[in-house]
Structures are given as structure tokens and as C-alpha cells.
Image (cartoon, rainbow, N blue to C red; front, side):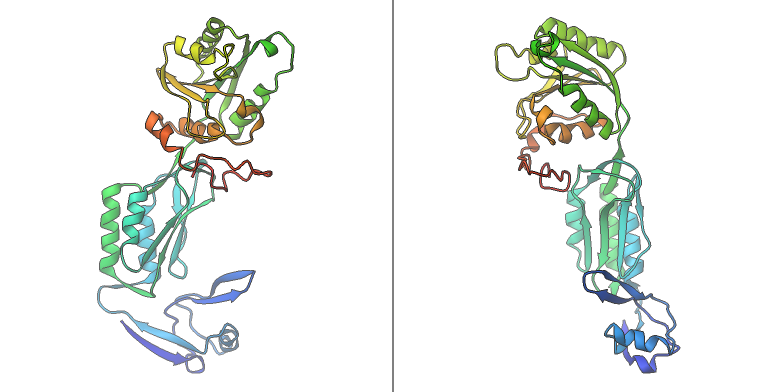
Length: 341
């Protein structure tokens, strides 16, 4: 690569070989002049206003790539299902989600790409809910010109991993609810749990089925769960009765359906008494009382995985303990917080 430094007054008629950045503190940072721009006489005051007394004329050597071309190639390599790449600018390409769903990042691939000199690859956290247009990752080339071999190495690394950045769409699965407890069933208190669960179901794009009320009777709860499954519900949530109290029989009722229990108890707070089981392809959730008053719980970490078609294991649940302690902020900002990361 050959770089020639030229005074802006002498650069009129020359073709700019790279973007020139304009920075307005607190309001703007971006290209003032794009690569390929032919410098005009009237550009000189503007160039000086952004602190440019000289420009570079670049002649690339054999096998070298401009930062934008290199960033575009790597971004295309890491871009997976339901993700789109933007046009390169200043050696950077943004990747955005094109569908509502669960963001999946191959962390090992990210680490390996960043071991290649002069390549920076940044992502959002994996397993977070994203919506169309959300920024999920970015590729940045550090120098103005990079060796083509580095880009080829990056592409070869990515090829071994498949889709490095992808979004699993959430399916509008049908969710049946069983509200348990003598106090609600016999009308001693008004049920306030079903509306909370319904709001969560709708927030994540699922479909709400019937709500059935049962007393603290394990056989009745079991039959209601099975009735939901018979009606074709994809997920059944049995709410309440999940603690170790003698009258709390929901875990017993879930087991009596014949479902395979993945976990009863999680390392996530709030949500320690949460239960997850599967009867065939139907997920059965035992939801403790915390979901009624805590805005964000283990439910918010687990439910999107189910809607995305992932069948969670006990190992998956165990891993949620890292970052699984909610700070119970006065104003909840989840998912823009450390919880579940």
C-alpha cells in the first residue's frame, strides 16, 4: 500500500480513497465525505471545519482490501437466518434483526474472529429477545487497508461454525393456564395471576387458550393439565401451589400427568420454585407465586426458548444461575440490564 499525504487546497479534482469523519460532540458522529467523492473547491472550507488540513491518496498493493470491502465480506460470512447487513461505512458494517425472536450468537466463533489482527467483531448478548431493526452485531476493520489473507482466514473460521449470528423466530404457540389454590377457587380472594400471565403470553407473541381454576387437589389439577393438552395447547402453565407448604400440590399434579420433569427448582431469583416438564412435545410450566408480583422472573428467561422451538435441558437451566440474580430495580429495564446475561 502506498499512501500520499496531500494538502486539501491541492486536492481539488482528486478522488477520496476513504471516508472522512465528522464529529459534533453529543449529537453526531459519521462520514462527512464518502469514499469515491471527487473533491471540489467548495469542499475545502468544510474539510477544514472538521479539522482536515490534508487527505490521503491511497494506492493499495496486491492482495490488499479497503476497509469497507473487507468489513462487508466478513459481515456477510457471519450473517445468518433472520439477520441483515447494512451498507459499509467507515470500515464498519452493522447487522440487524429482520424478525422478532431469540438472538443466537456463537461465542466461540466471536472469540476466534477477534484473535485475527485488525478485525473487530462485536455482538449483543446471546439468548436475548430482539425485534426487527434491532442492532445485533457489528464488524469493524481497524486500519484503512487490510491484507486480504486476514479476511480469507476470517471467512474460513466462520465456515467451520455455520451461522454465527442468527435469530430464531418465536412461534405463536397456544398456551393454556391452570390457576390453582383453594382461596381463589372458592372465591375467598380475587384471582390476580391469570391477567399477569395473559399479559406475558401476549407480550411474547404467543396465543392465549382457556383459563381453568382448580382447588388444591392434585387429581383435579392433573386432569386440567391433560385437558389443555387434549385441546391442542402447546404449553400449559400451572400457576401457584409450587412451594414446600403441605397444601401446595402443583408439582405432584404435574408429575402425575406422566410428564418428564426437567427441573423442579432453578438457580434464578426470582423463580427458585419454578418447574419445567415435557409431556411429549408439550411443555408444562409450574409457575411459583413470584410471577404475580415480580415484573421479571425466570419465566422471562425460559419462555422465549420454548417459543423459539428449543427444548431446554437441566444443564441449560443450571447455566442460568450465572447472571440469574435480579436486582429488583425500582424501575425495571429488562432486557436492558444484567439479569439473565
